[in-house]
Length: 162
Length: 176
Image (cartoon, rainbow over all chains, first blue to last red; front, side):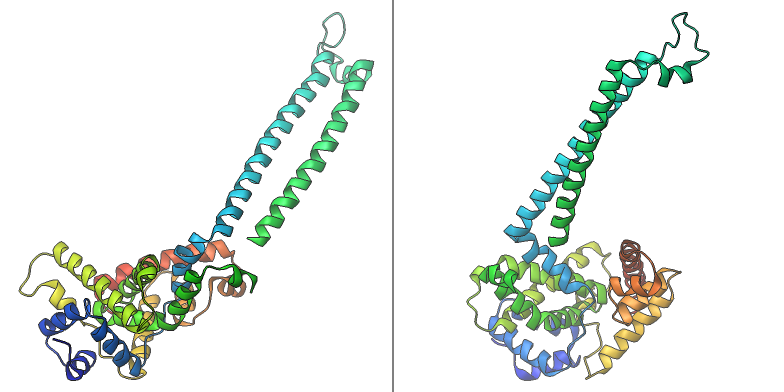
């Protein structure tokens, strides 16, 4: 048996014993017709204001979470970020090796093994081969910085779209 | 606009229902739970459930559909609370049903706002100011960040923390 208008009104205005409230709510939970009547009766009164952020939170967990474009975008950004960090690690490693290649050959200092003028020998005793290596390393750094800046700008652009 | 065009019909229908009936769902949940934050949780659960079962909805009487789902969610919640509670003279389920005051025009909104404001003021800084701006003055996290000069992430964290504190306080004191 459906809920009467009087019962609904008593429920809304809190003039109904709690046990009876429970009964009509149990009925409404399985009856679209009475749920519709309750909806209409509630809408005649002033409805509550919505807690801030609730709508966004619901959308985040439903529409936005299921959006394929968002998933693709998110996967793409993750891939780019991963590639960027791998590339950065490679460049850092290469740069470390390059620095070692420059420093180690001049480290022993003078032939007698003395380390007295080591600082001076770093610039003076650098061999032609090492100079060549140094310019190659500088080129490597230049290329790397260009690629890093390109990667960064791509990543930032995608973040803005997101 | 382009995003809306790309959006699936299901998503558009869901957003339409959400925008039209979010207040109704929250009011039904608040009427049944009598607690602002529990009502917020139940409203969220209601719409998550609606989103999942939208294919089975025939489009007739959307207000009734939302109300029925909300009532189901709240009854489940009250039954869960009833099972957790120590048995007293009257079960928690019966005690909790409609412990919210009747929604007289305008009064309920004001009373809820006032009680929220009181609860916000009991928090320690900086949570009291953030909670008042967010819950009572209707400011967004970005607006609060702009006014206070704090970082957006800091404000978002403070709002989350304030919400946890308010939830505990309100549940403990049962003020709204």
